[in-house]
Amino acid sequence: MPQLEYSSPSTADDAVRALAAAGGSAKVLAGGTDLLVQLRSGRIRPSVIVDLKRIAGAVGIREEAGAFVIGAATPGAVLGEHAALSKAWPGVVEAANLIGSTQVQGRATLAGNLCNASPAADSVPAMIAAGATCVVVGPKGRREIPVEQVPKGPGETSLAPDEFLLEIRLPPRPPRSADAYLRLIPRTEMDIAVVGAGVSLTLDAEGVITAARVALGAVAPTVILVPEAGAALVGSRLGDQALEKLDAAAKAAARPISDKRGTVDYRTNIAGVLARRAATIAYQRAESRA
Image (cartoon, rainbow, N blue to C red):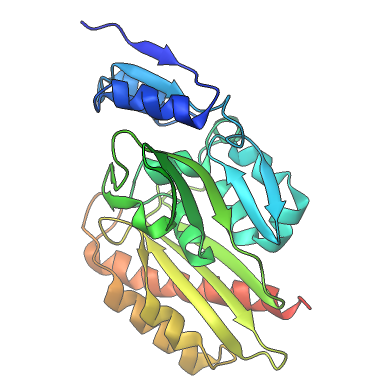
């Protein structure tokens, strides 16, 4: 059995070289809450683990011209303790704080949750609704892509074997803007989402929605952005008619499977319900902001 090697590079370039040298058999370590479980179960057998934590910018949260930059190895618990981030993007922080137990949140990261590429990932609908982007590093340098372009299918991402995600960026927040994330799970906590819904809204001074993004989890092979659902809200004050259109758009976009957590019909209906509820919370939060 080949020996598993461990690499802890101090620069992004060194990390890229370590990944390239492995010829596709390396795995990246950010928090490790998914990776270590997969290793112990034998689901994956990499030749080398590349730990990102020593790379500058990989751990921590910083503000740049109103945007928030979150290092790929930043634990979810740190997000919840960051007052400015929690105020600007409560839905993203809520979603991150739903990943596992308190102990897991001390290690789990947004980047790991995204790159694990589960359709039911909690933080991903919230990040997509927020319009978040990722900084991806590889042999050709750095590129920035929308979060929704990272997952390609269950357990599969668009990143090349010699690329890794270094940062997640949340854009500057316009006035009277807010977001929310909700999920349905069979238990009261620490379970996989049957459906998840993230909504981000911006209002004008009269309370009319001028921009909206809606994303759904656990209803397709990847978390999906639903432009029709966002469009259903724009121009409204979130009255009953707008909510009905949102509900219909969310249901129309859903392409779930039936499993032990829920049937196709159940998941489809819940997608509409959660989208409505998340939109209502986001709207109420946006109204309270100058």
